[in-house]
Amino acid sequence: MGRSSAVLARAAMLAGALIVLAPLRAGSEDGAEDKQLRKELEAVKEQLRRVEQRMQQQDELIRKLTADKQPPPVAAPAPAVATAVPASPGVATGRTAFDSSRAKALAAGGEPVVLVRHDTSTEDIAGFAVAAGILTAVGGRTAHAAVVARQLGKVCLVGCHELKIHEDGQGGEIAGRKIGEGDWVSLDGDSGEVTLGRREIIAELPQAELAEIDAWRHL
Image (cartoon, rainbow, N blue to C red):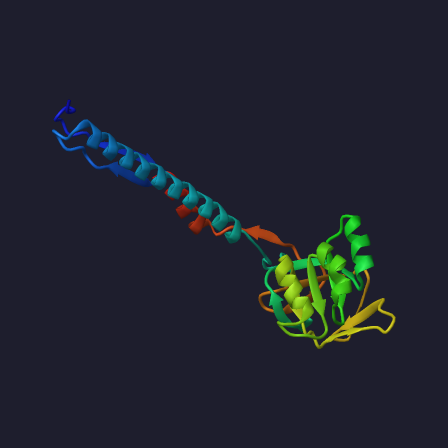
């Protein structure tokens, strides 16, 4: 027997996605109506899957929008002592280490580390892993340090011509100013600036964009 001639409307709302099922036609055969209903239910399931994917994409977007930023110093500005080629973005501040073994030792003590090298090679991978940033005296955006830093998501400046590493590898100079192991240095992977001393780093959230994403969740 046929179903009721009343038109059936169904709607589902989830995270801003409106899903409307097409009405069944009055007087249609039960088999045809069942087939149409199953088709509509599959359409709903597909829409819900898309909504879930969209929410996952929003979560990933929030993660990407959260980035370390270097704010203006609270005290008098600390001018950059040198510039280098930005190879991997972000900002980093840490204690200077001139080889991977010392970088690991400082990091094991809970200190942020900036690995400072004339150049890097595959032997420096352990240092990359524990460093907040990498600074080299030579190289460009396709140098070993640059490529590995981008893969690991590490701040990296290369080709800092003002950087000189002592022959014993235990210290150096930046623009004529001596630096030793454990000295604080800060890197700005956006501007390419190198600053001596510790800089405060905050996690800056783009509030307007995040508010818009949150509004999507409540549609």
